[in-house]
Length: 86
Image 1 (cartoon, helix red, strand yellow):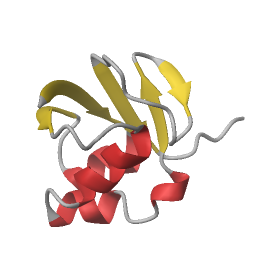
Image 2 (spheres, rainbow, N blue to C red):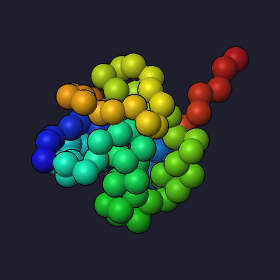
Image 3 (cartoon, helix red, strand yellow):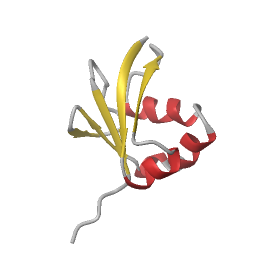
Image 4 (cartoon, helix red, strand yellow):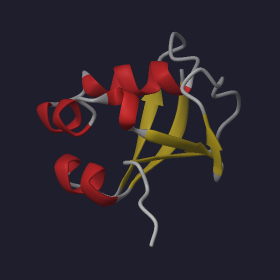
């Protein structure tokens, strides 16, 4: 197991009910997509926030990544909805 810091933004944060948390990840969580699926099982709030996982954006150590990106030795992982511009 390894410990990572998670940061949530926008409606992901609102639905989960917190802006950040530190969690222990099982060894089976290898990619950003694995992480999202794992988080959905933590609570009803996580499941609600991440229900449509294909629209959730991920950044590992402040670098935007695809869902198939390995987590590696990530220190911080951010999850957020699609960004809109203006």
